[in-house]
Image 1 (tube, rainbow, N blue to C red):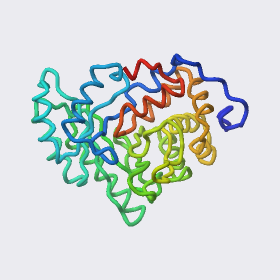
Image 2 (image 1 turned 180 degrees about the horizontal axis):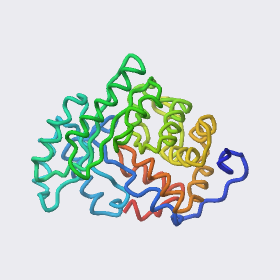
Image 3 (image 1 turned 120 degrees about the vertical axis):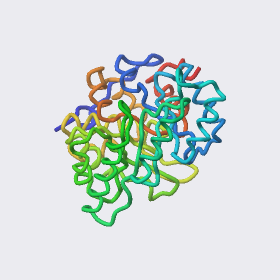
Image 4 (image 1 turned 180 degrees about the vertical axis):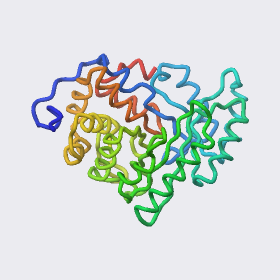
Length: 314
C-alpha cells in the first residue's frame, strides 16, 4: 500500500517555519529517554544528573523521558539524587537497565524500589545473544517472565530483542505480555548499526503485532546520515517515526526501508509536519521513545528542521 508522497516520490508539503505543527507535541512528547551515562556520551554521573534536573524543570520537560541508569549504578545515583533534594515526595524517575539478563531483574528492581529518592518507571532487560531462532524466542520469553515477576505496578517493561534472529519469532514470544520490544539501532562499532532492511523488518513485524517498541543507540539526529568522524551509517529518529507511520498505513518492508533510507532533511521534516494529531498518536502508541546520550542534540535537530520552536532549547 502506498503511504503517500514520501513513498510515491511526489512533491512534499513544506514544513512551517518557526512554529511547530499541530501534531508535533504528540509526535515528540516524552520521546527522549535520557541515557547520558551510556556510550558514546559516557557523562559523569553528577554531570548527567544535574543536566537531567535542568531538563525536567525547563522547556525540555515535555519532551524528556526518564533517566536511564544501569542496575550496577543505582546506589551511586540514589546518593546524588538525595543530595539534589529528591525524596519520596519528589523522586527522580528512572529507567533501570539490567545488562546481566533476566536473572538480575528481581535484584535490580528490589534495590531501586528500596530507594526513596528514585522512582523506577521502566525497566529494560536484554534477551541475550542466542545461537538460533528457537533459542532467541526462549530467551525473549524468559526475559518477559522476569519482568512479569518483578516489575512495579504501573512501570513499563522492555525486552531488548537479539539481533540476527527472526523478529517475528522473537516478537511472538512476547505475546500475552504487555512489555515493549527494544531495538538496538547503533553502538560504538559499524556492525552495531542495522541496515535499513533489517530495521524495517523489525518495525513491520512489531506493527503487525501491535507491539510497542523503543529504539536505542545511534539515534542522536533526526535524519539518516553518515557520521563525519566515524563513517558510521546512522538512522534518523524522524525517519523511524515516519517509517512506523508507513507501516501503520500498510506499507511493506521494502517501502518502510525506503523511508528509513531518506537523507533529505527538508523532505523528512515536511512529511513529519504534515502528520495530524491522530496519526501522531497512532505512531507514538507503537514507537514509545528513543534512548539518547544527549537530550539537546535531538531537540536542536528538530528546531533546525522547523519542527519545534527554538524555545525548547532555552
